[in-house]
Length: 294
Image (cartoon, rainbow, N blue to C red; front, top):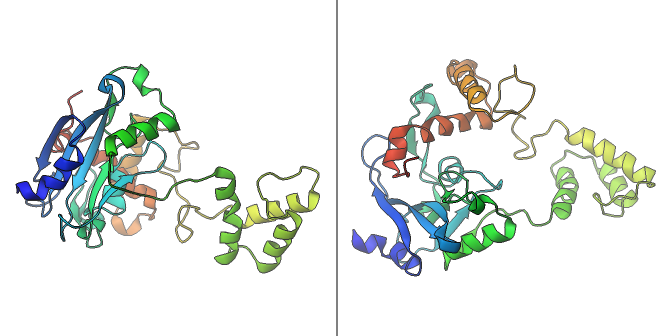
């Protein structure tokens, strides 16, 4: 098995690893994992006060030749489990066979690990299972987080769906809405002309542009921007008017939603994430992943 792990050992040749281990089985998945999974902590920054947690999964095709990818989940501050279990990783939740306190895992036949080695990183510090040994080290910025991720990475390929510039990203929603038939040809052409192609830094005296943008907002207000073909949902039950990330409300929401019969449950992507909350907070899961004890 040593030759399969060689790429990762070389990857961390210049960084002292605080702790790492091979994970052969996980709660909720039947039998041994049919792929190589390594988890661990890497100390970065001054005196290695920041301990970044990672999941490394070997390519199922040609580990020696396939590229090495680093997956940084967005947010920032969203656990790497989001990418691993809900996006491109080899495991996903089996919703039809899962219950309130027993999330079940199954293989993802479309996993990117079939053609690449992937590191899923909990970054910035405080995300997922990454932690700092001092309160000062929890204070970070885009610059410090990028520096820590670079120190972690050292070499390899970076892949993601990054936010580039907020003004440009927001402005692109209007042409995207037009191309996907959410905004009519007439409204799009009028908005482009009246706003001179700038939909963010709008002159407050430009009444025509403001009127067009108000119409565009009405066209998009009931659209889930993360995936236009899915409904807008909240991870909080309808009884709660605001999104409050407290453990008690999340626990209540999990009971309300997960305990509902599958056929009568309103489907929302965010509801699926509740299983990761249950699974990742299970002490047996944390022991299997070799998470540090609090």
